[in-house]
Image (cartoon, rainbow, N blue to C red; front, side, top):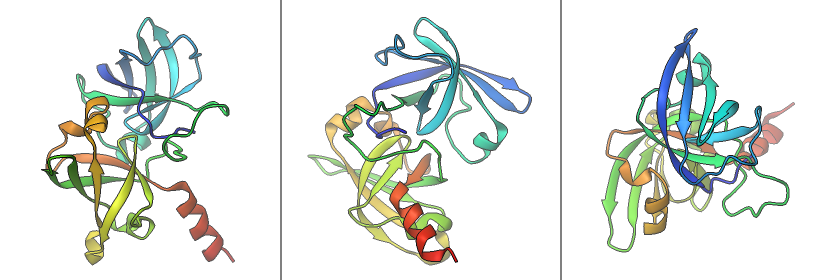
Length: 201
């Protein structure tokens, strides 16, 4: 489990083909790997991945073809990525409970400077639209955010807005987004279980 509070922005130093999937070498700057062991989880742009090797400030993870098919932003060597180590039970939960299991890929519709903050407008896949609620939580590329507004244009999915303060832009990669960019979305964990309870027979 994660909190959606990004601890570092790393760089994909190498992306090697591995039987259809990828082996990524990710360089960290401030994450600190001293307490990370092989087999531990690190969220990379919101995707929970297992550490298979470490060398100084670089950790290696394997990404399956299935994961690559339902996420965005993991295949490009040189890409900057948001990083977060898995939570301990004693950690402060500053964002919301995040599993690191991406539910779908969204698209940036607009990114506007409002002066004191930035307004990020995103489009979700239609299958995720019903889980996105005003004042609810959503994870975008591993960052825990609060939804301010939602509109449902029907089969196209949902269009929703979040506000980004300067601190968030400074410590994540979200400030690099542009209209048309693809992002990893994870809906609120509680919404999944509420739906299951209401629809299970």
